[in-house]
Structures are given as structure tokens and as C-alpha cells.
Image (cartoon, rainbow, N blue to C red; front, side):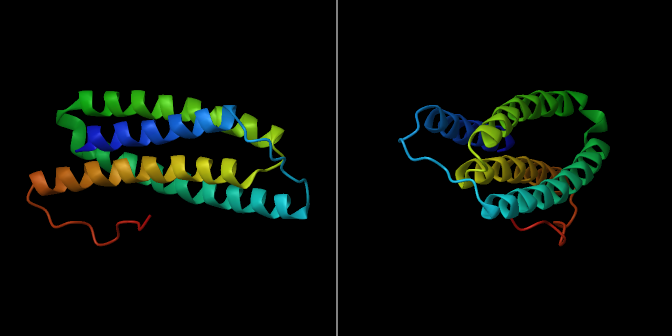
Length: 137
């Protein structure tokens, strides 16, 4: 299930990258709205980075007996981070285009979703109740 989620998220990010590389000719406007959007992005990045770190720590405790799972996850996340770095370069060039900001936030949501899906599977395997504090994406 986690592999399907990873594949789907990589596909979505790849599609967005293709769309970004072939713009439709509309130009973004540089305004105070872009500063507000950048502030929102900064807040979202702080939140998701914290949530992702927390879930990774929790997952690594479950995956001690299966270190290959964490290695595969790290490889996938590294690829996602490369795509996100490209998006951040585009963000500077696009004057805080809303679509680029949404794509960056989506990459964080996808990572968090992957981690929560994997944690849910480990909990189910261990006979634990699902975590009630799961983040709503």
C-alpha cells in the first residue's frame, strides 16, 4: 500500500513539473499578496517539517527489525526533496506563483501521508489501535 502511495505521489509531482516547464503564457504578478503567500508557505513548511520528523522517528522505532523499509523510504524522500528543490527554484523565478506554492505544500502533505499510511500498517500488524492523533491532510 505504501509503495502505491509513493508511486502516486511521485507521478503527481512529475506531472506538475512537466506543466511547470511548459507554461501557458500567463505571467505571475509580483505584489504584497506574494509576500503573504510566502509567509503562508513558510508557516506550512515549519508545520509539515515538524510533523514529518515526528512520524519518521515513530516509524523508525517500528521498523528496527526491517531497516530496509527505512532505507527505501529515505531514497524515495530524497527524490521527492529533489523535485521540491526544483519547485523552490521556480518559486523565486515565478514571483511566488500560487501553483508553485501549492505544489511545494502538496509535496509535504504527500510525505506525511506516506508516513501515516506506513505507521497505520505497522500498528495494524502489531495489533495496536489506530492512532487517534493522525493528521488530517
